[in-house]
Image (cartoon, rainbow, N blue to C red; front, side):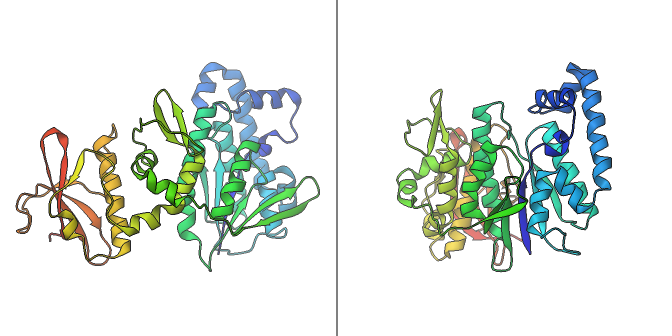
Length: 370
């Protein structure tokens, strides 16, 4: 199986149009919401919406050669498959769209053509803040792309699953960053070489981000920044970006943290990344005889609980499930709440209690209460 991540620009909409329509499309290229254009300029909105519908209808009937001529994204995909999509393929396609109306519309037309021609597992990813109008938002979006690749792409890579980054479409700032990202998350990166029709293939290099010691020296703040929590201690260097006394991770900081996080989390139970969580006297003893994988799961649970405690919307995902308990276990009679440590195999819970000032004290690790 092959997973192909394709960056999507707007060539489907901008190819073979007159100058007036091209100017109109360029003017609204970074508009996030269709409704905003409809309200601000109804006449231009109607023109663009009609153009999108026309292109959808046209692409439905395009043969592969014609589709490749009209779409940079599909040109790269078809060149990878040597001009013809494999029938009944189990391949997965992610179409990475800008966080704009036109970007999503373009990717959706490409998705429709792929599905019509036999690629059924195809998904448009409209990535938040991926646009070219606002640098701080774009920078934040690149950090989000690192997380998305780490959580979605990396777990699927295996000897039986090849990952390809198709950077034939998209815009330069985006594809330049993804070229670097591909060195860590893809088996190869592909482009169409200028106008030659030839596919340029760049294999994965034996690269590794050697920054584990840097992370460990500042681990608490790396964790907080990766979780989207406030970091106010002054930072410097290539990993950090500061604004108005707050510090966040640069995309490179996200990348090195994701590269080493699993290994660090497996080594030991780490201190909580927030003062709103503390360990009770028996907690670490209750976690002694567990595997590296289970230590990683507990550290991840602490991250989720920190987000739940500090984030304004207090997220409580199913993987955390922070909840009151009706009857505490005999070995933790003062427990009032529990969180999930892990659910696979011999499921375990972390029993805890609420203290004054909104602090959660972790009492012990124990079996799931039936």
